[in-house]
Amino acid sequence: MAECVNRCLSRGSPSAPEKELDGEKACLEGYSVLLAEDVEVNREVVLGLFEPTGLRITCAENGAEAVRLFRAAPEEYDAILMDVQMPEMDGYEASRRIRSLDLPRAADIPIIAMTANVFREDIEKCLEAGMNDHLGKPLDFAEALEKLRGHLPEGGPLKAAKAGAS
Image (tube, rainbow, N blue to C red; front, side, top):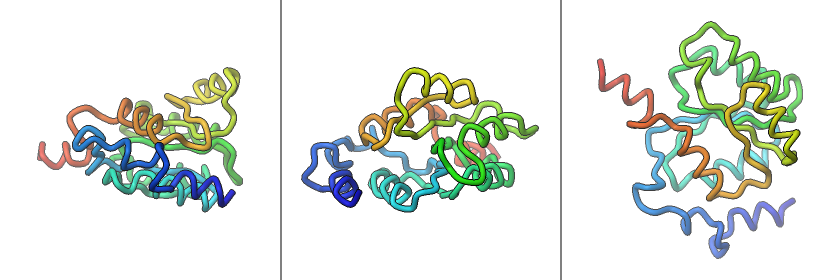
């Protein structure tokens, strides 16, 4: 496991974040993501991968905590990265509960699954639970960046857009 983390974070690796960043093209400054991940080393990998982008990440250690954090401040998040296998409440149930909340953004916030389960049936199960997309683990930074940027609101972060509209 340590070797995998080192490879993911290695400065010499072709998948290192610095190799993929292309000035403003990859910049996620001002965007905020809720990361639901129960494994500490996996949270650290995601935080390390996205650190150079300026993305603000709030961590939840299980699905129940992710639902609670989203319910408390849905306007805080531009997207959710959701592990699917977590204790207390898995990512499938957390996604269904978020989608069923009677709150602004609950129906349309992008939820991107993160799982080592990458068969077509696994991806379909994520989509059926209300997730918008799927990332395989271990995360490939370029793919994660591309998918996340594809789901983030156009015109900038929601919180910044609301502040400018006031």
